[in-house]
Length: 74
Image (cartoon, rainbow, N blue to C red):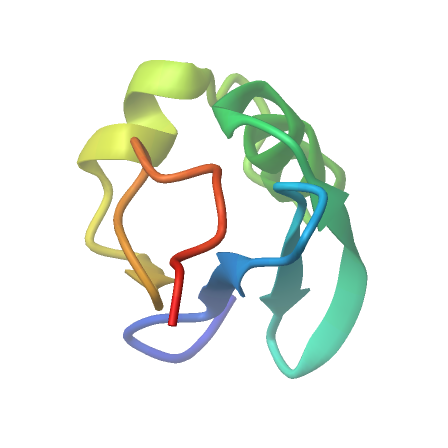
């Protein structure tokens, strides 16, 4: 986790799932902050929880922040 924003969370898809990349590698689809915390833990940041995910500057949220889990109309 070397860069300033190694975790990228993409906008929600039609099912509300958000693609997650860590360090340039796709790690899965998240359906909530708990999923992102699990992905980050697997990447080496043990002990992270949902609040760490919501507050961290290491995560770049695209298409809405941690509260957005439904696709935008338009």
